[in-house]
Image (tube, rainbow, N blue to C red; front, side):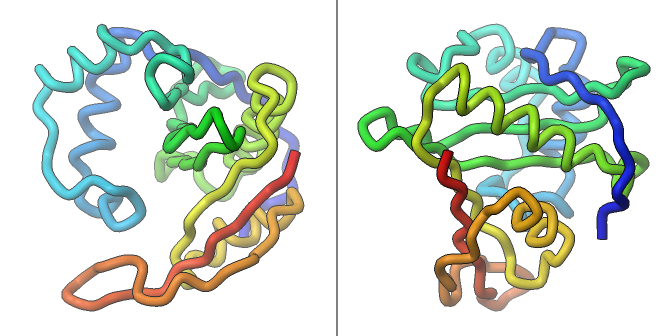
Length: 172
């Protein structure tokens, strides 16, 4: 469970200097279970992704931001993906690097993202699809008022078997 500790974070666009961290995250097979990734990415592909990103959710259909702490260390990544402008919604994803977990950073980053989606993008809702066994993520999301509306049977495939997931929604 995430500790109730006040920390400050800054969300910012990706920079070329983020390539090594992005390469590490995208190629960490342990994280593939919580994402749609199932193949490794080359540095070349990720370099081009950073270079080509317009950082405009309307042009890219997604936006990925780096999470920095007060010391300007990059502690994770937060995404808005599956953006649907017609229905004013997007899916969120967040990864906090292992040394920074359980310190309140996910909570702070999620608050910043909610502020951005509300005041910058004017979305109606954001949602997350979470493994039913990911209690830390479920607790973090419910602490913001995400509702645990729907069980998605056999939604995630991991280690040769299917797992259930929760569709969690937040209405802005």
